Image 1 (cartoon, rainbow, N blue to C red):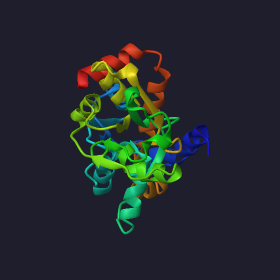
Image 2: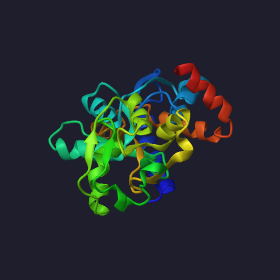
Image 3: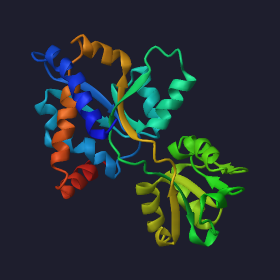
Image 4: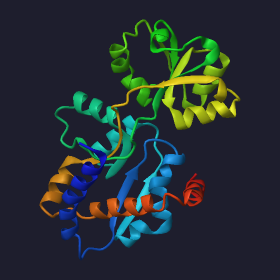
Length: 262
């Protein structure tokens, strides 16, 4: 299914939800990000700051997160209505919680390709995936790339990898110091952090899995309600995001919104 077709299918499904909310007051939506207020968060922060959500009768609260796994769990528990996280984390939740009453489901693709990657400094001598065998890796335990690494390793015959866990702020520092041979992380986070440590141009990397996608999702029982016209507001979420996409050329505006939220 192409991205365009998925978006059209999602819009058609959510259109039913709008009918039940036509005469309702603003619908409160708690939205959980996968990570801190970095660049990608502007996709959700800009509609809040510009009033696109309110124009669709939505009261949206966007909170920073601490990893995709946490975002999935919080949506499943009902603490948040919707979230933004890596699809691998969603798959893992489904596999580990087959009897969960409210399993989140993916409803919109955001990235064309995953930003998850394996990164190593050029001085490490790592040039191909085969060079990763026997190396020492570092990443937080909840890092999406680390969680999906076993699939990547199996597909590329990588073995005997050792993992070192650390807090997120130490990941790039430990790579720069030589405490680990490679790290997993999102390129737009780790490369900027390495650049700040003057290591960015000395870094090489490879995409972890091109089949993974960053997704929006919500609990499937709310989707079932949408089909019955009982749950409102979700069409507005996507209408507001589309307005934000139409303004993607205003990059400075998105940067300002992210800075104000940080």
